[in-house]
Length: 156
Image 1 (cartoon, rainbow, N blue to C red):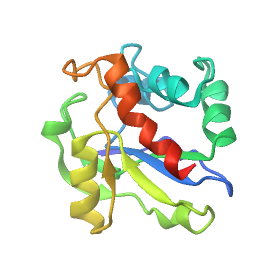
Image 2: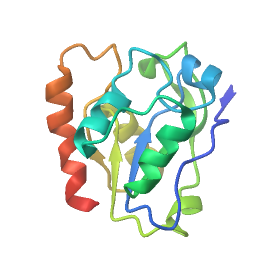
Image 3: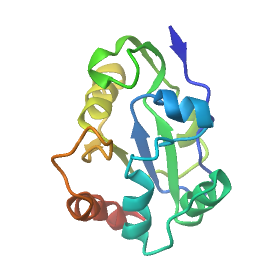
């Protein structure tokens, strides 16, 4: 069983919440979200927000918070083979009131179909699914991902 060890990013000005499923081995190693160098999350988000791509954890955190974006994962714990969302078993959800009791979250988005399904199954809550930025999702180009993620601007 693996336990989520990366703190959520949020403050009292966060208006949307982006949720992944569970940190990949590379993210757990780097201690921050979307740590795999091939993951396109930070490229996509910086393009949507029209800001330079952040590289350090501090730059990533600042970009999120300065634009009203909270970031976390659906799962607090699970069994998973490597970074394969399809292999997730024995999943338990995070306590989202940790964020929603502080921040005026307008909408919650999943950064992939698995995260959306897990959120709905474990919480019964409403969530909008965005395409995964994982390198495994080679069906979507960087431009297509960026266009899909522009929907977050409606709630910022």
